[in-house]
Amino acid sequence: MVNRDEILRVVQAKGPIIPNELKKEIKAGDTIILGAILSEFKAYGKINITHTKVGSSPAYYTPGTEARLERLIKYLNEKERRTAEFLRQKKILKDSEQSPLVRVSLRNIRDFAKPLEVNVKGQKEIYWKWYMLSTKEAQEMILKQVKPEKIPEEKPISVQKSVPEPILKVTPKQEVKIEPKKPEIIPVPKPEIKPEVKKEVKQEIQQELGILFEELEREKDPFFKKVWGYCKSNDIQIIEYKIIRKKSDIELTLTVPSRIGNQEYYCKAKKKKKINDGDLSSAYVHGQANKLPVIYITTGDMTKKAKEMLVKDFKGMTIKKI
Image (cartoon, rainbow, N blue to C red; front, side, top):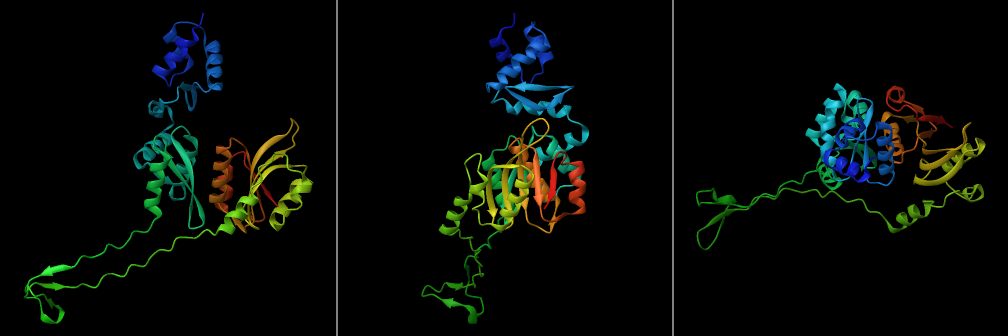
């Protein structure tokens, strides 16, 4: 007879742990039954499961014991292990600055590398943070990298009377001072977001599920019209959509018919002459975050590097040119 409370206690104390190890600890049950109980606990949110496998099995641990996941780094392959150690040391890595090998590894070590999308000067950049680094700390570190440093203000210097007279001011107490010219500090203007822009963006976000084509037809954005026409002609249902940038950039959730039934997809639609690897990487991360396969709809062609990354790193992503 298997004691469920004991299973939970052992996972909390020993996790991350695999079913074989759990069986040895509680001295009862078999791995199939234990696996079923662990899956049940997972469904109720009492335990979590790792992406990293010990042999052929994932490991189980309780929320709050994530720090012990570092024990699993040794089970990664050599390339992924080096990437995990590199990220642990640096804390933050900018995706576009890494080699193709590191970028692939970062996407594979999902227990240790967490993606963040950052908007820098109107361009979206993917950063990876060490899993134990808080989002707030990560934001502060990224901000230091992208924020320009201020020019330090010089302080007046007091000197003795021997300084040449043309540049001196003599005080009644015979104390002389040089008045240095303060360095010119060029202020960096902060981008202003006008209230009407905020209102427009808010109005463009569609929250209702199962949007009717009649309602979508009233949308005035010409690029959206083109994407909508493609979906309609292929019996694809738009569940929800958000216009990121008018006439060029849209995020959608789609339901696509297949032989085994309807499949939900995250979709990125972009009007652009050349689609690069960064565009695909951003869409891939969004799909992972939503646990959905990805369709990328575009009016342009992919760069050579993007084509290579699509085959090697973004398997399962579908590209459609309209």
